[in-house]
View 1 (cartoon, rainbow, N blue to C red):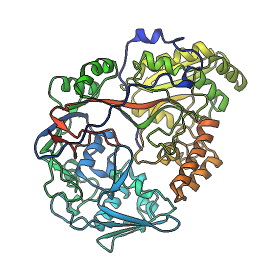
View 2: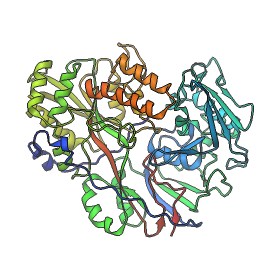
View 3: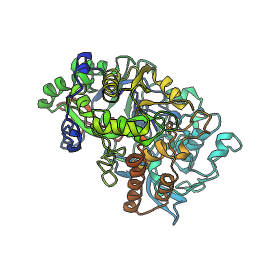
View 4: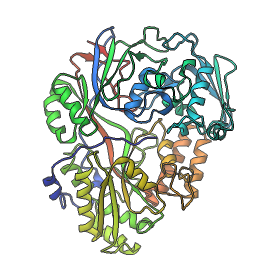
Length: 560
């Protein structure tokens, strides 16, 4: 799983100072602030070969599947590699290299039948062994992969990680056209996991995970191939793979990705679009209203609710927020509507769930009954829980992500409405993650979660399951449940859901679990739904859509 590295940019300090009292208590119950309207997808146009699509991105951690982790790297990896299944922007799953798949009665054994005749960019055939090789390369002890845990359900994963085995005992590639996978624990949604780049096939030339030649110029089986090595801190150029047969061949001749400075990434992207250097760009928050006014009439403005949640990570095992009423008091004291109106210019929507509306069959608005502004009720619950005036509460955010203004407003609200002393600090992103892992951590940390595959489980399990703590009470967490929430009833429901084949029944179990963790225990505090905005040259290019990872669907884009 991953957290977004660049989420919001800053607004003015003057805006912060007038936030308190902008909304009436309880105003969020009617969801009066709903964010900018979503734009419809372009009408499809026939594809034709030609054109170079240009955009800016931050420098990825990796583009080799063994360690691809954030949206920048995933964007490149999905262009270079096609896995067993593919996922569209709305979470719909379709065949990739696997033309179909079957699962046994208890969801512990999966068989994927592969399309015949597909090849890597170097002409090597893609077979079941190609997938086995790629997965073992990710999970091996010496890989150094930070995303190997995506494969942890496969039988033999612990032995690969500790070096006692060199192969996955649960992966059978003896038939080149059929990949058989045995899981250590049943999972009726396992095929969804395989959409992550960590499950990509690799050719024999890939070698070990530390093969720097392959790291910088991966040879994949996707619709695009590298046109020379990755020029770090400068750019990546992709060209169409002419022999792509897994799906429709790409229309674009090339995609040019320029690496943006880490401190001014979104602003540099935006400037590049305005100046004609780029054909696609994300938008800094202070410029949303201006951009919308200028570009929406031209059809160049894209607005979408996306796959993600913005929330406060709460340390639920340490004082003073180790009581559900204390956490609910914090939530009720936050005027989300005022922050959205004042900082985000009305461009976001206050959240009342953890599971986003991208999953309509599991989405249950209002499950967080205290995700509204009611300072009177907040003070009542604070008094009941011992969160008395003068209590010190820590609030930490990552610098460089544009969190300064809205967190300053939240600090002001908590101090005014509850009389708390808020220890408010900003640190680099890596330091924030490290601080939140410590057993003595207390208070609240700014967090954003974007799912890697399309299931509510990809929110509930990594963020809230006991198994995702990954450490003892006196050790730093090693999983993504950094708040250390643990509830046996919640865990049981998730385990039952994973073993449930019927999708409707499975979603009902996910809803029950969310009602416990968010509705009753408020283990995390939802803030606002994730809605993103882009500019695109729709006069020059057609079929520009947004994928599940908030990137443009370059395999579909075509010159008009």
